[in-house]
Amino acid sequence: MSGDSGSKSYKVVTYGCQMNVHDSERLSGLLEDAGYVKAGQEGDPDLVVFNTCAVRENADNKLYGNLGQLAPVKTRHKGMQIAVGGCLAQKDRDTIVAKAPWVDVVFGTHNIGHLPALLERAAVERKAQVEILESLETFPSTLPTRRESAYAAWVAISVGCNNTCTFCIVPALRGKEEDRRPGDVLAEIEALVGEGVIEVTLLGQNVNAYGSDLGDREAFSKLLRAAGQIAGLERIRFTSPHPRDFTDDVIAAMAETPNVMHQLHMPLQSGSDRVLKAMRRSYRQDRFLGIIRKVREAMPDAAISTDIIVGFPGETEEDFEETMKVVREARFTNAFTFQYSKRPGTPAAEMDEQVPKAVVQARYNRLIALQEEISWDENKKQVGRILEILVAEGEGKKDDRTDRLSGRAPDNRLVHFTRPAEPVRPGDTVTVEITYAAPHHLLAEGPTLAVRRTPAGDAWEKRKGVAAATPAGVMLGLPSIGAPKALPLAAPAGGACCGD
Image (cartoon, rainbow, N blue to C red; front, side):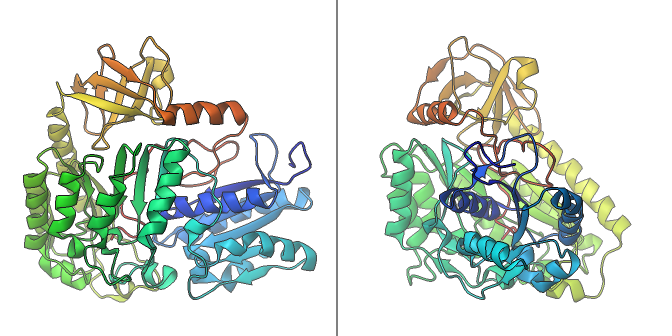
């Protein structure tokens, strides 16, 4: 349904990783710049944009299933348009229109800035527009944006990836790594802080390889230190690094820059040297554990998470036990664990010795049980600590029933705390004492020790006053009818797209 002013309404549906969420904010900004308005909860939007992911084997099934649901909606809603972009669009190209001829626009990862023009052309010519570029035309961060959070923001420092992991199709879809100039990154962060943002997450497919395109091997650590000098910026995070490029200067920058959080997401994928070689991962178990030891020596309070793939082709019981060994030694705060699934177009999909599903499931269950035990033990160490929590919006599903609020500790642990007597807004901070630990969250059941009102809280309050009737628009996972859920303060610290 169109907005009150006659403007067309839109909805963006996002699958996959933080980079896609960031791109979706740009898509929303482009559409609003072109005169569209965010769709409300009632009625059908005039435009639905799917920003797709190609990482999982069944990504196309999810897309085509949802496109099928929209076909009758489009029939009854004259003038409605449907656009498909992102990694799956880059991969499948003309296949999407062949399978779903009611789609109006297909665009790739390199030309999201063309979407408004493609929609207009589709409407005028009354036929589908398919435009896929093979190289990046405009860096996404130079495009308009509609951020989903008033207090936390994504900042892309690079796009693309130079790695050739056999399980990952992302480099083929997003291209070789291209780095932004440091001055452009810092200028964007300064502008965000001026708008009230107090937390930024630096994004890259392989974020700590930043500088390879600039000819400076220490560019990433220098960028962390420079961002740390920006007044008003309280928390800096980054995702997702690669062990190959995780150098001592980065560890030093993290330890010595007060507003760089002591949180690290370091994808392991497998603990077996043999499997890592088959994955074309350019490190081995000793190298990975050596990084973990150095990080903990420099930052004993660091919370370290990881990605792990179970059942990669050829993985034996001995290989899997090597992964379990690393998990026991590294003692991750949490792990994003995946059962291997074929990614069409990747070398691993054609490998022999695909591990039987039942074997993969059994190993996966054992890994989950071990990691749950470790996560709980590590969280119990937080009991009694006094922490400053950045209050979030939409993080606590039970907050209304329990009279609690939720937010993130500096190390990104999720904390639920008793609602203070005085007003507190998303973006403000509270100081609390941790009283209870569960595997995936902490509780602060006592009274709040302090509340600090921040420019981020002011920004949230201003946004709410201006756009109280506007629901959140970008979500992770499958689309649903009605208003999407609000984005968390920080998406799970999984790897950007492929878990580099």
